[in-house]
Image 1 (cartoon, rainbow, N blue to C red):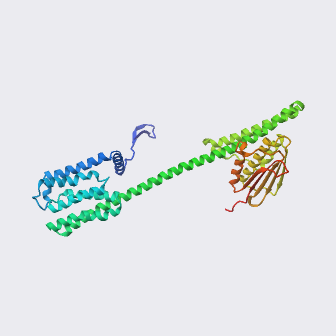
Image 2: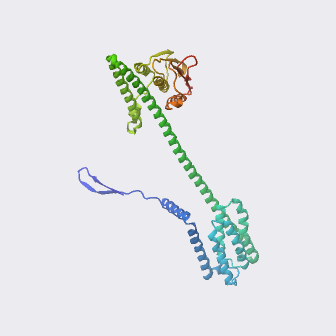
Image 3: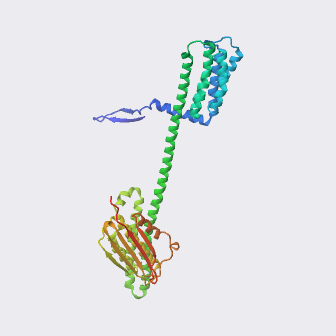
Length: 426
């Protein structure tokens, strides 16, 4: 319930206006109560069975001691001890109706035959229908093929022995009761199976959703780690080369040392800018703004190569064809070239040179070959383990191939070859 004050146009304040929440429908209360009862039954099944059985035992005893059985009996001279035994024989076995319905039905069968033969015709015999309901609910349906005749036989015995009324009244009505009890059991069983199937499906969908979330998180972590490696690893390698060169030049050529320091500052600011852009993607509130920041492409290769050259690695570039690649493929080419040059800076040693050959084909196809003249990179196991796997992951996104390894003897150095095929037609 929520109260608020309304103000008229003249400015006077009216009394509180109460907003009533819509009342829950009656079915919601019924469902809530049913769920609570089922939960209690699952926690205390024996207690529930004892209360249920005790109620019907009491009802059977009231029928016996109150003389209500005389209104339906065929023979009023049935001994009292037999009537008491029959009343208890129909009601007490109900305690096991859910755990052992078949056994309870078989226990009640001789009691039902004695009840029919003696002419007592106790109404407690109808409790067999409760057991039949649990047979249809819990046991294989083929059990009904012998359970139904077992319940019908005593009625036939009573009709033949006493012959009161017509067969339609005695046997027909009893068969109808058996059919209704069996159908109710089958209906409830079908409904429970359907509900269980829905709950199982919901549970599996929830597990699958959680797994998808974990996979997406793992993929995002791998993507971020790859970007961090490409950004920080390359720029730090360039900065290291510039710092080494500046240290050697400081004693002989202070002007060259100052140029190296300027280049270090430029590279550091560029790395910091790219790192901030990457971190902005991780912030929910800045996701839209971060999405507008362009990723590196082919137009940024010149700046990349200039930084590498400033770090002391001579690079020669050869281009065949006209570049016409979508942004995703441009980023892949850029990152592969960046990683290959970074590894050359880290492992090729002084005096190494590098050569890049780019060949653009039709439909977004491109082949990039990066070679250097160093002694060769170390085995992948001796590196940080992210460079080559990152390049292969980017290549696999577009169905391409990546080859990386030492150049064939007698040539020295390392060779990286990237090939992206034509884009598949949409």
